[in-house]
Each structure stands twice: as C-alpha cells, then as structure tokens.
Image (cartoon, rainbow, N blue to C red; front, side, top):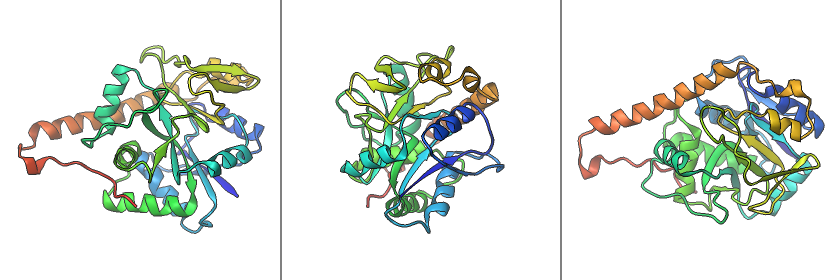
Length: 284
C-alpha cells in the first residue's frame, strides 16, 4: 500500500506534465494545500504531518514536487525498490558544480558539518522528493517541527540537510539514483538542464555515472523541461510551463530573502563562542 503526496497551492510550472505522467503509470496523487496561500516549504511538512498522522504505520509515503517531477515508473516498482533499501527515510540527491555547491552550502547547510561525499558525486540533499513509511515519517517530521520550532516560511531543505549531515542512519539520500534522478540547470540564464549523466532510452532514463535506472525525475530550480518531455514521449503542449516567470521570480525572491536574512543575522550578531548557533535536527 502506498500514497503519493504532492503539495501545490495552484496550477503552475509543469503541473500538467506531472499529472500526465501520473496518468501514464496509474498513479492518483493526493494534492495538499490547494487554493491556500503559499507561505514556504515548511508549510508542506506541516500539511504532510497532519495528513499522515492517521495512516497505517507501514504504508509507504512518497512526497513529490508536482511542478517539476515526472514519473518514469509505477508505484509497484518504486515501493519494491524502497523496501529493499536499508534506510527508513530517503531523499533525492543532487550533483552540484563548484559554484552551485557553494550557494547550496551557504543557504541550506547551517551546521558546521560537511555533507558526506558519495561515489558518483551526488552529495547534496534535495527535499523535493522523499520516501518513507507513514509511521516513521510522522515521528521524524514531528520531532523536526517541534525541536526547531519551524514556521511555515522556513526551508524544509535546510531542516533535512541538518539531519542528513548529523546522522544519515536516520535520514539518507539516494546517491545511487535508484529511485530519484534530480537534475539542475547548467546556468541561471537559460535554465537548460544539466544532462551530463543522463541517457534517454525507451521512455526511461539511465544514469551512466551510477549505472542505475531511476523511477522518477525531478528537474529542480525551474529547469526548462521541453526537451526532457519530448525525449520521454510527451506531447509538446504539456511542456509549456504555466505562470513560469511568476513561479521563477517568487522562488528566487524567497531564497534570496532567506540568504540575505541569514547574512545580516551573522553580520550583526555579537561574536562569542556561545553565540554561534548551529541548528541540528534531533536524532531518533
């Protein structure tokens, strides 16, 4: 038994492409947050906690971003892969070049700990896709939201990254890309996807670096998905993003605001050893 959860306050970006991929593989996602005001990514965690609290503890829960995710396989394959892995909570993994890696570390890794290095270079957590069981996810997310006193406008990726670099037996990333293939753009201007590791074949993708066949593709960062959709056999109209610039600038403004806020906080905080605050998620 499994449930796909997707948090979306409105239709934007590649939502239609996401829904078409769900239909292709007989997936009926539960859409959370519809018609609500968008506040931030931790509102998603709060909504998910509320939804899964009464679900069977062993039910598999897959959380995805419905604006830039394409399913490449059905839930039977995804659940089978996850059940065979030795981790209770698995997030997507990103491979980042040096500049993007520095930005990531500054915005999302507020601990003093470096991200673990993995074979193939997929070293950075991406919170846009994760999978667990309802019972484990509920306990972990409740501890995170309680311990860090999260607000809706906080960033889920920062919270997950803190847990990952602190104790990856509690929460790990799919650095082999067995379930999730996360990609980012090659540059900020064109937003063309970086597909250096990817080969398209028969409606699926193959990661040539990790020698894996992912079950789901997540093109984060408002990547242009036109060529990806065509290579996977989707109609051209599905690859036309809705409210593209609005979505892009809203996300950019949100992240820039967070970076600026953190920078100012560091500048104006009186220096003392006791004043250095490292937020870490509590281990189970």
